[in-house]
Amino acid sequence: MIMKLIHCVLLTASLTTALVNRAGAEPVLPDDCKVGEFVMGSQAWTFHKFTAFEAIEKTAAAGGKTIELYPDQKFSPAEPNLKLNHYLSDENIAKLKAELDKYGIRAVSYGVVVGTSAPDWRQIFTFAKKMNFYGITTDTEDAIKDLDLIEQLVKEFDLHVGIHDHPKQPKNPNYRNWDPNYVYAQIKDRDARIGACADTGHWQTLNMDPLACIKIMHGRIISLHLKDRTQPGPDGHDTIYGTGTGQITAILNELKAEGFKGHIDVEYEYDELNNQDAVKQCIDFVRNYPAKN
Image 1 (cartoon, one colour):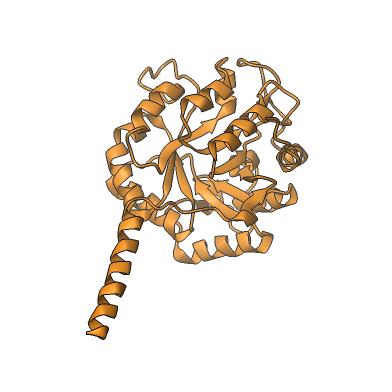
Image 2 (cartoon, rainbow, N blue to C red):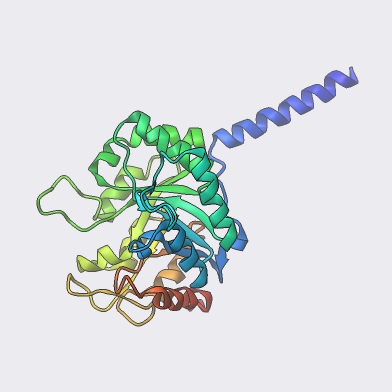
């Protein structure tokens, strides 16, 4: 009788754990990924003039703790003809993980990437799970059309997905991810692990208020490509946090108030051959961030 009781208790505990996991217990980024109060690093596109291995090294030198990798960056100086993507062999995944470990960098996400078919989406998620990513960043109207499939994969693989915003595309009126109201309408009733990757620079290019855009998402921000810009509109360019019109402190205050648990990526798309020091200054700004409530 006692053994049956113990068995029932253990079985109940196991089922409870399974139900919690199925209900959407979210993967959590550890505190050792934080710079100050936020998980912080770079989007590898910042260093797209270099290889992925060099982007990892430059992120570490700038003081970042994390990196979001992107598809088809040259892999390494030793293998420049190899592209980093979700079809990497297990051998090359091991090399990539070793390089990340060498510099103490956590790869937290992968994107911007869009699956071309159901098998391709599954391959993206399989790669993300092998790499122990927190999430995947996607875009385009095709990703919106595929949200039913994406939601199934999110539940199966226990990963986050952020819908990224690029500027309007005059030749493609079907593209609407630039509009946070539209994106929020697509994700608000879906699994909580589906949200937005807020590229605040693209909003500024469109003369949109990045802080207001973030608030529209009602706490469903998964990650940010956080940018300060010299001025709103298409003539502005990326600049060091706190020196432009991007409302960086106000955005950090809002994220803190929302209990943001995702990651912030510096994506610095200016002076791209010599931007490591600018990235360091952006990361230092977040490291020294004082909440102004």
